Image (cartoon, rainbow, N blue to C red):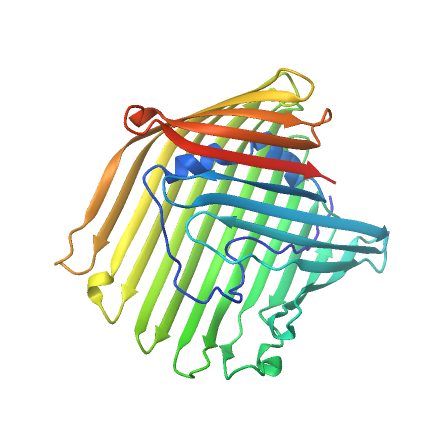
Length: 397
């Protein structure tokens, strides 16, 4: 077995970039995590994606708030020879707050000795304004997409203090992004996927030399798959994310600490057959601590947690078309507890249930797949029967 050190730039726990120097505007509701689960890709598609070097996928759907759940990922890895790979990666997922679009991460993997499968990589984001460019390096043992581990280092806005001639803003402490990504097969049945990101503390000083923004975050994702055979597998997804940030201005002094944890267990049967059945159990736990030092009446502790059982049935009824049904039933608790005793707390709990009906169209080999969905609120069919729609598309290069 080979071990590889690699990097790929990641999603919503990424660098604090231009236009992302503020407190996140969190908007979540009771059934948000059922909405997200209903609009995500099928687990069989996720597994194919994890084992593919190049492709594009995007998806999302309506949630119970005034925002959409969105996923975007494009990755291109071109082997120019046994000694050089070149490509780029862009991944983003927005579900609790709006985030600016991330920049493309370019990489060049150099294997000096092809027989050893050890590579040194140059990394960088493409930006017309040099002050916004990120630069870094990676060390890779093995070759993607399987049996590798990649460890990377990326410096935030590497040239900012040197190249910023527009105003007096600067970094008092420049953050560094550390990444570990790996995919490994153990025997014939077990597969392990790691995608760990850590942003070291950064501090940005605004033009007025009084205002400042700080950020410190991590996002750790782990997936373990057990393959019964080519048509059946079981898996568990684990995720732990934290995003701590503060903003100090003459008129504002705010701090925010967000924690998110996910445990998702699932069993999939009938992959690449006429009927594909998915059964799962999922737990989401989101917490936000917000403090307004200038007005304690605005300070609060927010928590939304949901446990849900779900099932999906996918069926190809022609060479290009399919239908897909999903049922999601869970218990949700949403609490907003204010620090000031004068403010009334907001506590909600109850059963949430959703039915998703989807139509899919795909190429004959299923390399490209499109799906359109509509959802129904089974827990409130009379007053609020529909819950919007969703779409996803995936293609492999």
